[in-house]
Amino acid sequence: MLILGIETSCDDTAAAVVRDGREILSNIVGNQDDLHSPFGGIVPEMASRRHLEVIDSIVRRALTEAGAQIRDLDLVAVTAGPGLVGSLLVGLSFAKGLACATGIPLVPVDHIQGHLMTMDLAGGTPVPAVALVCSGGHTTLYHLDGTDSPSILGTTMDDAAGEALDKASKMLGLGYPGGPAIEKAAANGDPQALKLPRPLWGSDTLDFSFSGLKTALYVFLKKEGYFNPAPRTRGLPFPEKDIAASFQAAVVDILVRRSLFALETLNLRDLVVVGGVARNRLMRARLQEFSKEGGFRVHFPPPALCTDNAAMIAALGYRQRRWAIRNPISLNAYSTKALKTARKNTEETTA
Ligand code: KG4
Ligand code: ZN
Image (tube, rainbow, N blue to C red):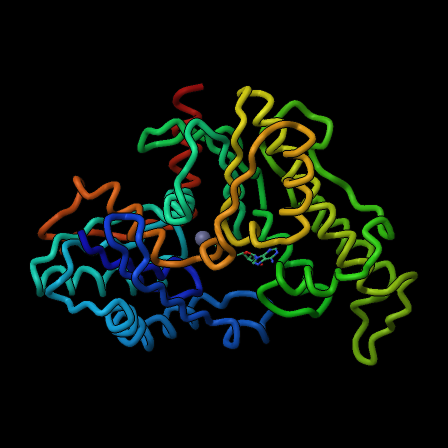
C-alpha cells in the first residue's frame, strides 16, 4: 500500500511517500528557519504563507523521489492537529483537494501520535514501553501498550522542553530553532556554572514544568544587565557557553529524571524517545549511560525522523487506514489550544 503523508502543523512543510507504513520511499522537509530566525521564534502568519508557497513543489518532489505518480497512491494521510491552525489548514486543504479530485481516500491524523510512530519507521516500536515525546510544542510521557490510543502518564504543566530551549536561545541572541543553537553554544561550556532550578524535581509526579527554569534564566540575565540597549553590557560572570551548557543540562536532567521515574513506576524495560529534542546529543548520551546502569533499553529514531516530517504521518495513516474517508470536504483542523482545553474538560468531568 502506497501512502502519501502531508505535514504542515508548525513551520516545516513536509511530504513523504511510505510503503506499508514502514518503508520510506521519500521524505522531503522544507524548513522555514531562514524566515523565523530573525524573530527568535515562529511567526504564525508568515509560516502559513510559506506553506502555501511551497506545498505543491514539496509534494511533487516527494512523488518524484519515490518514483511514484498520483495514480499509484492508495491513501493520503494528513496532519489535522494539533498545531498552528493557519499552518494546519494549508496541508489539510491541499490534501482534501487532492483526495476530492482523485478519489483517493484521505485519513486525518494526530501530529503527536505521528511522532510516536517514528520507531516503526526505524525498525519497530517496542511494546510495552514508556514513550517520551519531547518537541517544541509537546512534552508528554505515554504508556505504549499496543493499542491505537496510548495513555498519557504525564505532561507539561506549562512550556514544552523545546519551547524552553527556543526561549533561552532567543534571550541569548542565538536564533531559532533554539535547541540546536543551545547545543552548539554549550559545547565545551561548564554545565555547573549557573545554578538553575529543576522544577518539580523531588515531587512524585510524571508531569513536567519548564517555565520556572526559563524565568530563572531571564531574571539572571536581567540582573546582569544583559538586556541593556546597545552597546550591550555583556559583563557576565562567566562566558555564554557556560550559560548555554547550564540551561541545556537543566532541561536534559528534567527529561531524563521523569523518564526514569516513569519506567520505574510502570516497571517497564523499554523507553522510546521521540520529537525534535530527541536529537539532543547530551540527552542521548545520558539516557544511554543510564540504560546500561539500570538494565533497560532506550530507543531513539534517527535524527531526521525526530524533528517534524511527513513519513511519520504516512506511517500513522497506514495504521489508521480503516478511518480513511472518501468525501473529506468538511474535515477541519484542530489547534494545540483546543486539544489542551478538551483534555482539561475531560479531567474536570472525570475528577
Ligand atoms: O518535533 P519538532 O520538529 O516540532 C514540534 O512538534 O514541536 O521539534 C522542534 C523542537 C524545537 O523546539 C527545537 O529547538 C528542538 O525541537 N530541537 C532540539 C534539537 N534539535 C531540535 N532541541 C535540543 N537539541 C537539539 N539538537
Ligand atoms: Zn512535532
